[in-house]
Length: 589
Image (cartoon, rainbow, N blue to C red; front, side, top):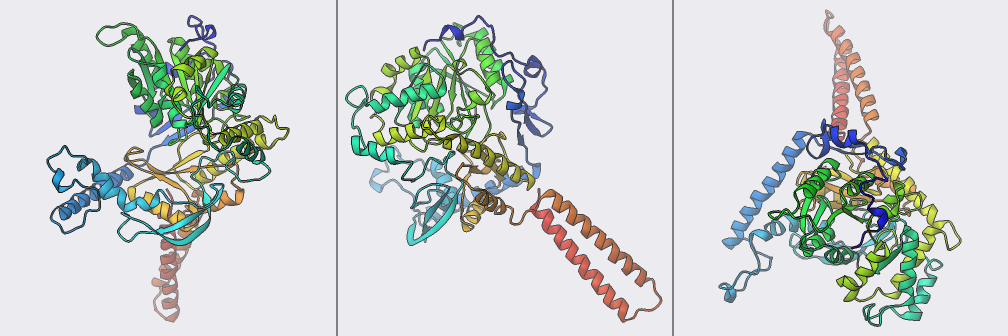
């Protein structure tokens, strides 16, 4: 990988760092201060401060963590008990097992490794892999299924759950659509080239459409060159090994996607993980790497590559790109930016986090992104200077051996990208970007008003709601589906054991009525803090009034019918107030 002359300036920083924040801010583990992780981006030269949207990672009360661990402990104990019942033949085991004649072989199935799948996941498997039978737009249709053996197998009932609001797809700009007028060019390209190429681009699979797309991507990102691949996951996992190898160092954010982690492991380079979005942790590792070099030999690292994401898909947080760029320039490292979730979704014109922070795209050495989300298609891209792209064309396994992207998908990406750029003569693209930003702000503010703990940046269309306890995760998903709302729920091991969550993905295609319906669903038994405090005050005033009346009657000399009636009324009103107060107390945080 070749660095251009503008990227090596002997330590002269285009973006100056706020040294006070980098060196003197007092933080606890992973940046937590006083129970809440606050991320306030420092002002940087050439970056407007108003572009830095605040993000917070509020910690749950201690009793929530205790109850979460207790819930997993109880489930684990019951799992071991059920394994005992299976061992003695009192319960049937549906999981794959070794055949009797292969007992002497090296076991294919490790019993303990399947414990979680066997005893925990199977009982709640109905919340995932739900089959849909319509366009996955802002709403879709689900095929109803039931299980007669506790989710080991499913059978379709033949019924359809219609008009389920889709809050799980990455259809950020709504380009996953079936509008005939918009898809005419895609249909024409399919008739012209067919649906498959059946060859790699280095053989006979290189079409003029592929080259047009790469020129368009480079122009859209504002870089010298770009190349495309047929699979987003492989764009990371197959290209990182071509960029770094043994003798190189990878500094990876602890919340990076699996494709980045796999690519780093396949490269053979040394991997060190820094805390999520923690610039103190990153700078310490960079300083140690420059000062100490490689282990044992202490030779300088051949390359130091920092790997981050634009928007983190589980947290909804945005990379602190200005500070990362400043650090990579200061320590002469390279920067690999994965914009799978941010390209098209953030920035005034949808050009990702570099535009969001008003940075020069040339400050990022390797820009990666996918077409599977904002563009409603498939595949990914690598963009940067010409030397980088030309090197990858001959050294990337994904470029040399993989089948070329099919023509209809290429045309869909070109159509969507031209729409975003406005080169097709309309403003539909920019309107969708603005609508997505508006939907994001509205939905996040609505959830905050209701008292939910949500993660991420205010600009991020990925909105995680913390549920914590494993039982709540399952109940939430099923309750939302009963209200015709499809959500994605995630728990351990995909998240920390105490941070199970539901993840909402917003789209420009969502209407305000849809968002209001989704907002009411989790809050059907919840109330805003203001309403809670108002109701509590009314209850206390009513209670005080009736208690005063009751007391005055109690001290009278004679007890008559009026006293009994008033006494009964006081008690009933008191009970109603207590019940109402209790209902609010249990449904608000």
